[in-house]
Length: 212
Ligand SMILES: C[S@@+](CC[C@H](N)C(=O)[O-])C[C@H]1O[C@@H](n2cnc3c(N)ncnc32)[C@H](O)[C@@H]1O
Image 1 (cartoon, rainbow, N blue to C red):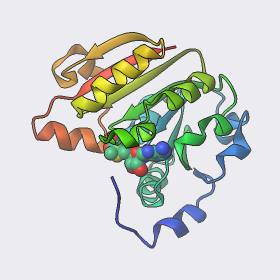
Image 2: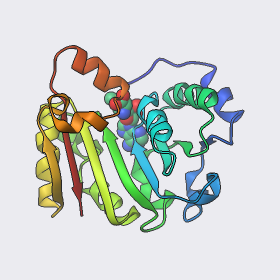
Image 3: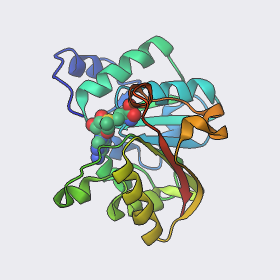
Image 4: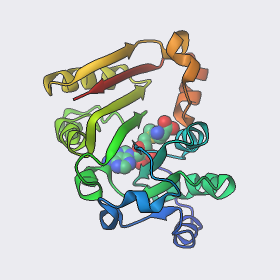
């Protein structure tokens, strides 16, 4: 997803350093300082316009959340939501998720969310998929022992690829849903912007949770 440039986004980010981190490597091992309370940290990689991470932070005040996104415009849109909500347990990070091991110390993270990640269907772009083995390596590094990955997508090809990639990596699956919205799991589900769009078109939403 490429968003059209919005000239207000960068100035808004610069004016709100209390909510957005642009040099996340400076906080490796020190993320708890960014939050009001010291509590488990959950990271969404590719947070887009921020609906999911904002609603999760509202729903679970006993957890700290970080929405990581590489597009400045998307971070700006997510930031507008946080400026309204003023959640003490939410931080946004404007950076590429490929640097995760520089941004967090080993075991600093309790959970990782991947929601509607870009599918990169061409084989030559496999390394960009957020469930490619190098990304899995970095998730394993930053997650604590009990840490889980939760992955949702409408894209069947990416879902199948991710199941294989995680399985080959030796990960263990806690749950797999082929139609999330028609399952018990839907009760506690928090929707993303993409999820609403695709489910309204009648497409099934796939979900998996897994650990190392
Ligand atoms: C298709 S959108 C989905 C957005 C949101 N998660 C949702 O479900 O509505 C994928 C998002 O992931 C971001 N993204 C893709 N690769 C990324 C990476 N390596 N690091 C950070 N963000 C990334 C893109 O910029 C885009 O905003």
